[in-house]
Length: 374
Image (cartoon, rainbow, N blue to C red):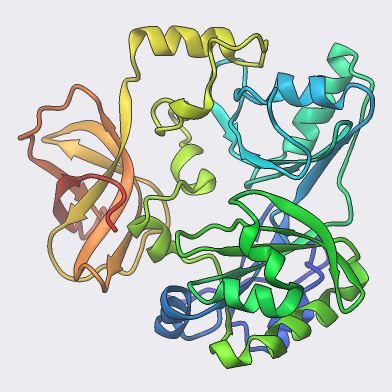
């Protein structure tokens, strides 16, 4: 079944929107109250470019929350569960932001621009509102706002060669999640080695939204020798690579996930001096042990094309987990998925999931698999 999405003024457009339309975007999703391209009508070509060339993505919906002022470092320390005391200017860190129950409410990348200025490059939830509320309620002297910043991603094994052509050889020395303020043809931006794939690449954080079309076309033109083409964050590659999707994997309506369940314990520093929000709850969770764990799934039966909502994983009639997202992997020639499963589940348990539900259920058996698949 096909659907359409209404393009109206209540959902924001990124500075690259017109460029994606000109390049043949076929569908959008909504992320952080903004349109984000979903596909350009050639899923196999988009997947191939990501794995073998350069994929170019409008990820302007990956909004930035800027925290600036005397207490900026203190507020960031309060919001994030990771020990940030050794973070240097020009360095990004993957962090967990939790509520007071210890549930994950965002997994942004934190960028330190100077000692009193930070960006949270956020997943799909209203962390600006959360940061503003915490700052006001607890008396931090900061300005929390959304700056004029919009990322454009280049991802794939040839993305570094393209970045060298655009910016110079210095980009080869840029470590993962590190960044530098620079420009391209006079267009101001921040270049960061980052992106939501395991194929490597960069994000160009445009800092003048009036020049989005210009940046889009400049990167596209420079990338022609590398067979660059437009695409979107790729669900199949992310499942194969075991990447976390906050929107799909964490915001479960009946039981939100905590960092330990999601395999993010390495970015929760319970022994640090930081009094981050959720620390007490996370200490209790760590002491008791998480009740669920993140896992991969292999599904039997005919090829699947995806799912529209999380689905319960069943052991007989008992719900023992959740299947967040599924896809068919051409590289593995299997239906694969990702989700959460009870930690006390026997290894030989027979598991099923109903892909269709009533009136015509489609039960599939599931086998647990380690992440990443590839």
